[in-house]
Amino acid sequence: QVQLVESGGGLVQAGGSLRLSCLASGRTFSNYFMGWFRQAPGKEREFVARISRSGGNTYYADSVKGRFTISRDNAKNTVYLQMNSLKAEDTAVYHCGANLSPVVTFDYKKYDYWGQGTQVTVSS
Image (cartoon, rainbow, N blue to C red):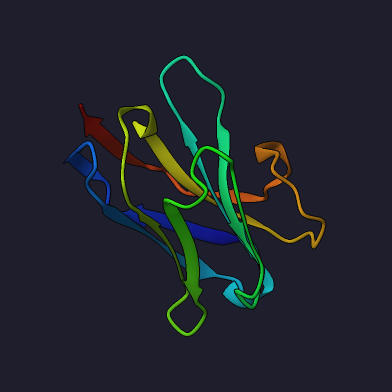
């Protein structure tokens, strides 16, 4: 079992920045591939970014490439999402997920554990 707690969301103006954090507890954090997903009202949860166990490989949705950066600190059991140049369309609840499988997936249904999410609102 892995428990995930996100933090760092808030209200920001378009063009601004936020850094989200996701603190993991329970099983060995470094065994898990980690991802960030987001869900806007009335929409399905969508992939944002994924990072490998060591942090050496990262993947991004086209909509955030060049603006968002995923990273992790295995000593602190934490994964981060640095979000720059935010747009109104980035408004959503952001969730981190943990995935044991090494198969790269952007499908939220394949992730094993989830946090409760943190709200990001970007005003235009």
